[in-house]
Amino acid sequence: MLALLGPNGAGKTTTVEILEGFLGPDAGEVRVLGLDPAKQRQVLLERVGIVLQECAVEQFLTVRETFERRASYYPHPRDVPEIIRTVGLEEKTGARVRTLSGGQQRRLDLGLGLVGDPEVLFLDEPTTGFDPSARREAWEVVHQLASKGLTVLLTTHYMDEAQALADTVAVIARGQIVASGTPESIGGRDSGEATVRFAWPAGLESLGELSLDGASPSVLETTDGRLVEIKTQAPTGVLHRLTAWAVDRGLELERLEVTRPSLEDVYLSITADEAGTS
Amino acid sequence: MSAVESVSVPGPAGPARTSGIGAIRMIATDLRYQQLSYWRNRFGAFFTFFMPVMFLVIFGSLYSGQKIAPSANTGSATINYDQYFVPAILTLGVISSCYTYLAVQLATQREEGLLKRVRSSPLPPWAFLVAVVLSCVIRTAVLVGLTLGVGAAFYQLVFPPHAALALLVTVLVGTATFCSIGIAITVIIPNADAAPAIVNGIYLPLMFISGTFFPLKSTLLVSKIAAWFPVQPFVKATFAALNPNVHGLGIEWGHIVTMAIWGAAAMVFALRRFRWMPSRKQ
Image 1: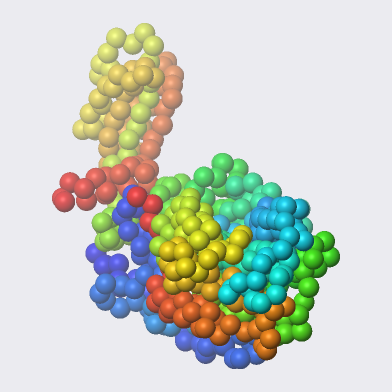
Image 2: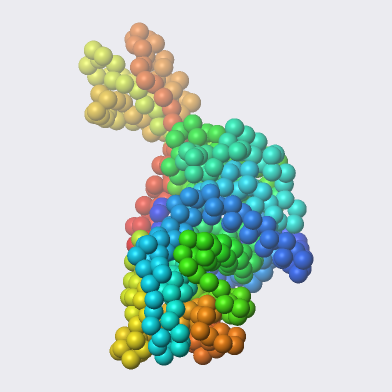
């Protein structure tokens, strides 16, 4: 599963719409499943599933009818009751689409993308507007599908979504891919500096003789109180010295944590660089 | 850094599948769901049927049984006003079902992304539009039957011998014409909110100057203007189809050709300019 990540207006939807054949490319060559989306669209549409942003569904049909109607467009559709189960709408099978909640409508959307038994699924911001539990449910569905071998192209501006779902993340800005890799390694996440942080121990006058092998602590005054932060390439050694120092003095290091830059930090720094160069 | 246009997903090519029978089956299936959807939406069904039937009842209560004196337009014998207002309101019904409803429906569906969704499926776009038009034809046929039924049952509408064929020809051409215009007009509708205003803003003035409620003298300036548009020819041809003073087929070919020219022009325009995508929200 590939996630396209980028700020609004970066070209995510445009990219996907070119791949889906809604738009023709201004230049270059596009192939999806070996087909040209602009010229061989009709054939391609039988083999891909498209889940669009903000697209209405006929309000007065039931969930089952909506799926059956869509299934009638495909040469080898999947079994409708099975799709309804997959997206968790069994209890709404006979309900009209207009009575579904936002999250249920989006799952209906997802199901509609799957009816034709696609080889590739395009998901354009599938969980925008979801409440947290609906997002988890949708992720679960997508995750299962991807684990069964379906190729998924996801666009999103949620970091956690890309992190939860994608094998590969590509960050797109101003129509260009500016970084790509696994969610764990993109932008040097796995090799960059780690941050060790803890709350200033109550009653302590100064850090005194805390020696950290060259890494130097800095003190931050935050709304959460005073914090000590240490940036280092070698967190294991730093942590060892730090904890030895604290144990010697009988100090409990409250809120001690070691963090790598989050996908969001990396994303923000990549897109900020891009904005800076323009 | 790879450029966006080089993104591709490899795989083998497959054969296309749109045989004649497959297409007919697709259209029939989609038509069924469009009909289901239409009749379940009580507001939509109510408004298509309410206005024509309301006018029929109002004019029937006020003027049923009154006489129209012989004239160049109505023929040599006195006829009941019923023979005029029932066919005239029949045109109002056909136009509100084909032109008004279709235009508002398609413009709204386009802006809501429903048409875009159709384009994301393998249903050929033309097959979808054929199903839309057939669904409209079914609705119109029900409305025409209802109008004539109410006219004959509650008022004094009579059917001259030529009526069946003349009505069939006139109403068929009228349905085709106003469906085409309804589809074409969506091109100039910028958003869903503007749809009713634009659609009615064009039809309502024409409705009044085309003699939809009372016969207008053809020497009036407004009648001369209206003669250039498709509504007045439709009213006159439908009236002739039910006019007991008419001898022969009762098919007003001149008026029918005027309508057909408008219909053909609208169809050409629609084929070239019809939009499936919602307008970009600014």
